[in-house]
Length: 296
Image (tube, rainbow, N blue to C red; front, top):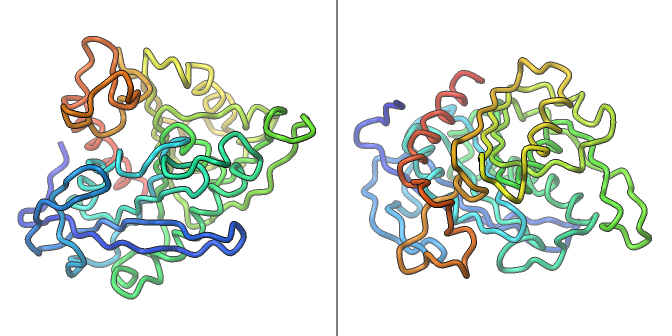
């Protein structure tokens, strides 16, 4: 198990990162270690124990950027971000404009495939230069954690060369998606990743960082095919640590929903019968922290 430092809580700072290409701003929550007292605080539709705008505790803290799934929200990764902050990381929860719960207008488009990786470049820049948090962040050794479409985003930022699906282009033709590798990224955590954009020969050959991948045995959205794209596409398969989580579905890697929000009408609140998300997540979080420390 990961040992969390005694007396360390999670501080939180909200920033907006300008994206001149998309003509919008990217909402980001930076969670980080602090010795200030945490209090129950609204966090999207949830409540979490954080210390708003508190002093940062520590130096050369590893930066971990978390990318949510298509049409999703960063708040569903709140427990992971809290755990990372208490373990001595700076966790950046990113909301992708145009492909989030508040605005999903670009889902299924080439523009979205271009935008998402750029968002992470900009967020890394912003975290490193933030006047409050930036001086405490290690300048290199960034880990990207991506769930579902966030897995696509992580692979693209780490050197993957995506090709759009035919239905994502107005003329019905697949196109090479222009993305830029970020050399500051040194490790990936892929959770039920969506990967069909990397099926072309050599699409993942330049992804040469350690990867922790966890997928669900009963995931009906990103099936075993998606994981196989990663496993067969890497130049060095030894860089990949992949495990299939027994009985887990696609949303097993998200924070549990409050009882009043657990409903078939909210698919991310649902798990296959018999799967205990609340019991599994602490195990996953410990695996992720140990992986980040090894990868530095």
